[in-house]
Amino acid sequence: MTETSENVTWLTQEAYNKLKDELEYLTGPARTEIAAKIAAAREEGDLRENGGYHAAKEEQGKQELRVRQLTQLLEQAQVGEAQASEDGAVGPGMVVTIAFDGDEDDTLSFLLASREYASSDIETYSPQSPLGSGVIGHKVGEDAEYELPNGKKASVKILKAEPYQG
Image (cartoon, rainbow, N blue to C red; front, side, top):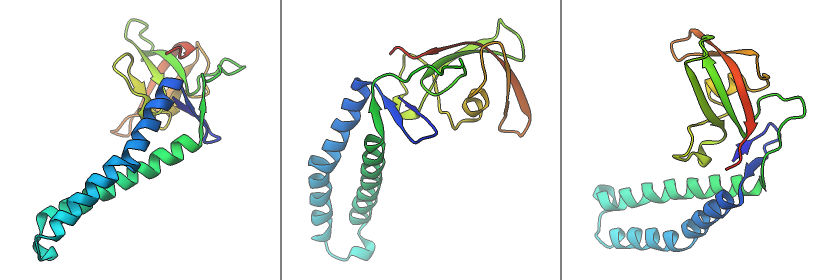
């Protein structure tokens, strides 16, 4: 899954189905379950000092936030594979291999995509992360700079950029 500046999120069919199933669960059975928890906690009496009630309401809030996130994500999704840029520049949906500080032996390959798509198969960096935003738009062979958490700058060389094949 990847995001572009036009707020389109590319999803594989598998990722789309997984997120759609999660949304269906959260808007169906999960809502029923949380409503039952809240009702049971209300029956216990004084709501001001009812920890179970407050915990259930907090859980409900988190659940509804996730529903809104998924709804927005799926509304903006395009199912398929992100296309490689015509100019060969790094962009969302690509597997990028970089070398740190010009040392071509110290490399990292990662998928430049939304964290929603993170898997154990390949490390995933968000396009909004410091490294992700630093490499976007650069071409193979170019150096890219990004800001470290301590405020210093780091440089990497783009060794390879290929569309993610799943």
